Length: 61
Image (cartoon, rainbow, N blue to C red; front, top):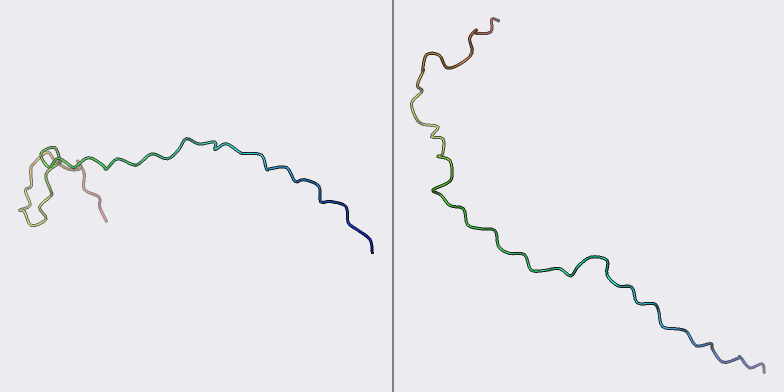
């Protein structure tokens, strides 16, 4: 019976260093400061028509 030669030693695979830096924990976003937020638009508020505000000409149909 034929004998097989000893298996050649398989070299260890090359170590590949990561290309990107390790991930860091994400800091929580800062809390919103309600004092600096714009006021909410009140859809139930009254309509105020002020002269001089709006288009100069109304489109005609």
